[in-house]
Length: 97
Image (cartoon, rainbow, N blue to C red; front, side, top):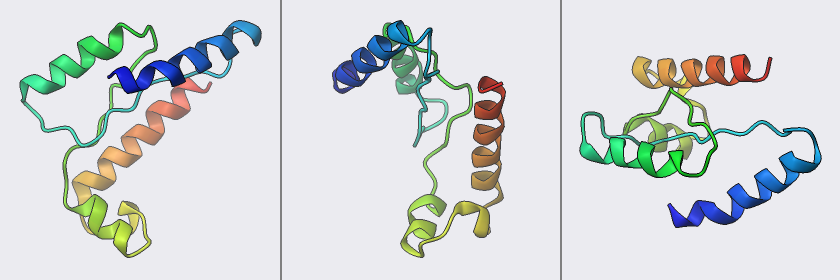
């Protein structure tokens, strides 16, 4: 998580000079559901004081496979991957209102 420090400091510095903009949130990807690591990541990121999206993407073959083809998972067949991306889009849109 230490790799986040520089970008978090840059975002917070910008927010201080622009009245809280840009809005920022962590996006957690490649999650292995029901593992202890998920909770540890949440705890570690909370220390930065920037929210984390509720929606996460899970470890799925569809993401690298479709990327090799130069496409989006929305073009593929993995419905779960599609649902993850659409849910993430919806959450980001809500945050931007």
